[in-house]
Image 1: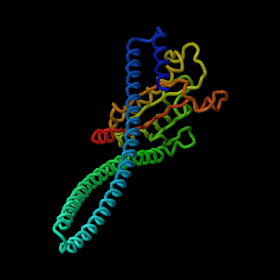
Image 2 (image 1 turned 180 degrees about the vertical axis):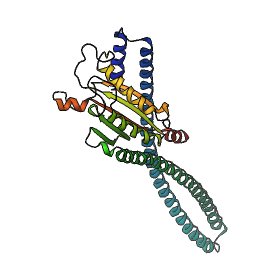
Image 3 (image 1 turned 60 degrees about the vertical axis):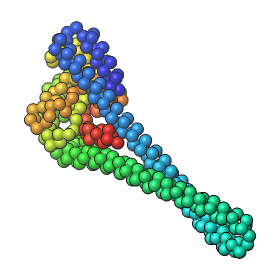
Amino acid sequence: MFKKVSLVLLVVILSTSCVSKKVYNDLEGKYANLKKEQRQLNDENHGLEKTKNKLEVDLKANQEELAKIKAERDKLQNDLATATNNMKTLTDSYSALEKNSDEALKANMQKNRELLAQLDAKEKALAAEQDRLNKLQSDLKERSQRVTDLENMISAKEESMRKLKETLSKALNSFEGKGLTVEQKNGKVYVSMENKLLFQTGSWAVGTEGKRAVVEVGKVLAQNPDITVLIEGHTDNDKILGSIGGGIENNWDLSTKRATAIVNILADNKGIDKKNLTAAGRGEFAPLMPNETAEGKAKNRRIEIILTPKLDEISKMLNDL
């Protein structure tokens, strides 16, 4: 979807002759940042899934190898017991044959030497297998601990996002029923505000009630500096004809201006790191409902504030594996 958004945004920029060079450069920078952030998120998520799957496969393989080595050890122990019994039998035979001829005695002694050599070899093989088993058990324990640590860190991230969602829900409780929702999905928290709470038709100026809601969101974000914030503007599919306000060209332009207006309000909070803020215009191309009805269009005209946890710690753990 980001690729589609970026392609259409680029076409609009290239085909619009009335856009200033500064606006062009700003949009071009935002376009590059969006692509970079999308690639990073995709790479990180893919890397996490790939590493987790590999560790699970390795864990299963080590467990199977451990079971195999234990079976081999048991067999060697049985062989040792058998060899010990045979040695006793031969010893008894040696005592009996000791009374017989020297030739029989020499033959019995040779067999006894061979048996002792076999017994020594079996003991050495058993010791080597035991060392190998101990090493595999140590490696298995270390890998299991790494998998556990990784799972715990991922769970902690999910729990922190759950608490963030609860905090936002409480902070925005007074806006319930006014077109504002807070939900958690795909490891992120989404704050969705319908345009009826924020903007007049064709305008990107935030109204008093909407600004109050955005300020409340900013207060929560200021207490969570490890969260990246993507503000997306969305419209219905009604075409913009002529010039509105300061001269909006199309739904892309309007959605971007509205997203930027929200970013500006959040940026007024000195506790928010501006590097964590990104504005994006999605135009009409990510609707929640069909645009065939007035209700559907109203739902599609919205601002979405998407909160994503930073994955630096998890990435470092993966690099240390």
